[in-house]
Image (cartoon, rainbow, N blue to C red; front, top):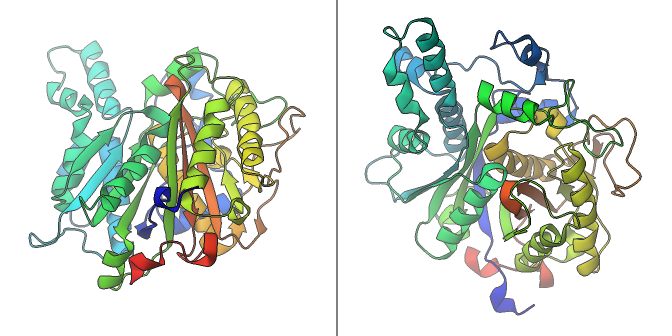
Length: 424
């Protein structure tokens, strides 16, 4: 590939992760890396059928010390998850939670799907009981821009704001767009990721399609019954390498490549052969400046549905065959976090970065009987491994496919020093 087409590495200087495994990055990673069971019955509804389903809930979300309890209680759960994730990401990057007015503009690239649906469901329940007493102010939280506006105002982020509503690839697209903005010089620093909350509509909708696994998903298993619905949030602080160096920030890792494609095949079903999914993976690696053999781990989308896993089991080997490289170790972590939809890409990006930083590959939990049609080198149990580069794959309704490539060091790459000039 022409060297001019290689992407400049973008530094990751802070990150957060809130999942059913824990309310912070450390706790979430501890549960994920040890395959802890964090699933619990859905208990927010009187519907007995839904109440038996296992979900990946984050439980009670504690109000930050600097926020009035009344304001916190009035927020949609998606806003609460995003606020906690933003607090942790900014703090881990050595930045104040509330930026000074004189600070350089910081971009905000965020993804969600359900927005404030939990508040609207609350209004609906009130209305069914007594239309005259229902609080109509709850309806305002359904607006998709609410979470974006709240985070920007709370943290005084004065850069460009973009909200992605592209479901399961939303936060990976947000990270890719933030990196593009940094590479183009539109901002020096950005906060990017996604947040998604559980709600009855989401759970009942997928359950009506018979896509929910009652007792937890089993990615790539021969008898996989469907998805586990989850919630969570993750945000990355992204900077140009020069900006990170100038403020003395130590990068956790680097975003090296991003690519997105579309099957143009079906509104919900993936293209069975995985051609365009493979194309996204291949393009992301080629743009990264990494040798394909540098890739030591692939975090698969791995939802546990028949169609997705079958497609992905074809796409990953196809991509690496085109790259003339062996398929590296693969795992889906969705049994451990649930499918967090718009937040999935960012959560799994954080998992890739943690896998590189800690030298531990997370397991493909939930697998009982491997599907002979899914020939992938799955990580069956967490294990130590020195990993200098990793890929996160995400796919969504509408045939959307994304791949993000990360490296632990800026020196990793063709010729040994791709992107070094950005640090000088």
